[in-house]
Amino acid sequence: MIDTKQLAEYAQHPELALQNLAELLSLLESDDESSMNFANEALENCGPPECKDIDFLLKKVTSEHALVVYWASTLLGRIPGEKIDAPKRVSIQQELCSVISKQSFDLPARERAAWAIGEIGQPNDSVRTELNKQMTGAPPRLARLLQSALSAS
Image (tube, rainbow, N blue to C red; front, top):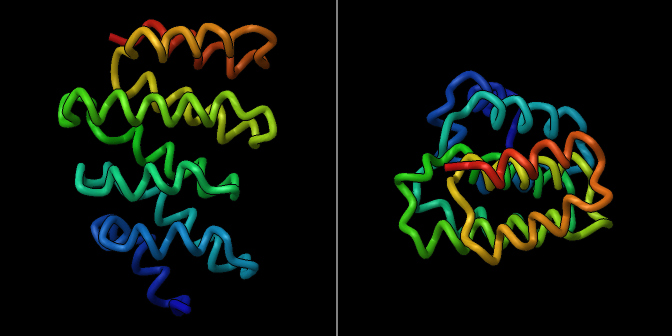
């Protein structure tokens, strides 16, 4: 387990947070509220991860822990779409669509997945079809984020 002093360093130094994404995301599943809070703060302060982190983040998007899904989606959405090759972009957007379609998932995690799709860039036809399906009966904020993702360029 990482100590509080180190977590405070991660929160104050975004480059350290980015170097330790795996550790921070695992702390989100902790029963230690202080560690979870520091991990949240560090992830909030860090910028976009490297493209080399995409596969790791895609695995985390399938977590059963809502906060992990939320942050994995957020981090994927922070990566500039133009830096992601087309096949990987489609893969990311499809995985994020899976998050949105799981009604049992936490609403903020689903909203963040919709936001990330729009940030990554224009979705392909299959993703667009799924996003349109999810618009039906979506809560207002999720519907706005889905609409924004559909109009991404």
